Length: 290
Picture 1 (cartoon, rainbow, N blue to C red):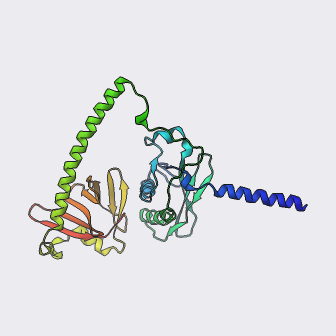
Picture 2 (cartoon, rainbow, N blue to C red):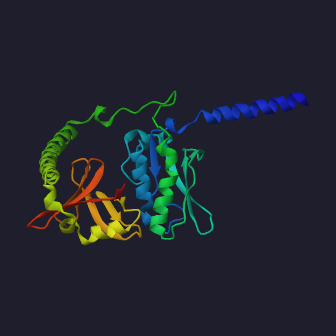
Picture 3 (cartoon, rainbow, N blue to C red):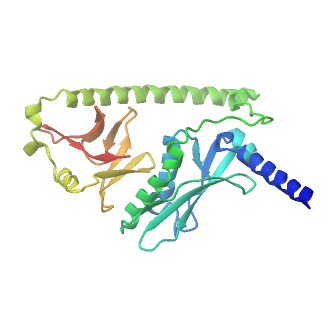
């Protein structure tokens, strides 16, 4: 009897050890569906877009499941973990928890529960998800290939036909032209940014600088939230009301405000909103959370 009990204990310990050897660091990619079970439509409340954005922000390589995936994960899905978000039951509270699942359906990682008592759905999901992501924010993720995993050769190293070579060369030339255009746009944006930074303080007195929408954000305790969308971010206030849309400019920490002669940029750890109304330049600091 004692011998059988001993064998059972050894088996359990062995199973636990093997399980512990599988970590998030063993996986190269994170795959995110466009809709989770508790959502009634794709990317409802921008939960899926925010999930992808935060994984990439914290050092992971994340893709939507319908994107063009890298060659290696297309051939071997076991290089990736699939994301699932569960809505945990709670009375008058929004609670979310993240699961990372391997190609065999095994749960490899579970996040802490993010929760909030905010009633507005869009803001509640945003806050709860960001809190749940603290698990991965401080994880210190770094991909470490498992022993025996064969990395697929990069696509450019594969043999191609002469016709494909010609097509590839044309594509390279086209991309070079695009790079030149982006460089010019970046230089122009940088020049605007330098003009804003060097603007004399007397020309940006608060009574002249503050726009109507900027006054609104000062009344909001939590400031504005930037939620990822295609080609940029949608900025909303504490009540999830749309404020503006920021488009990528090609320069780091500089965004173009859609539909306005304005930009938002980062200066000394503070976000600044600058707009040119045709007669003067007006700037103001804003509270913006990504």
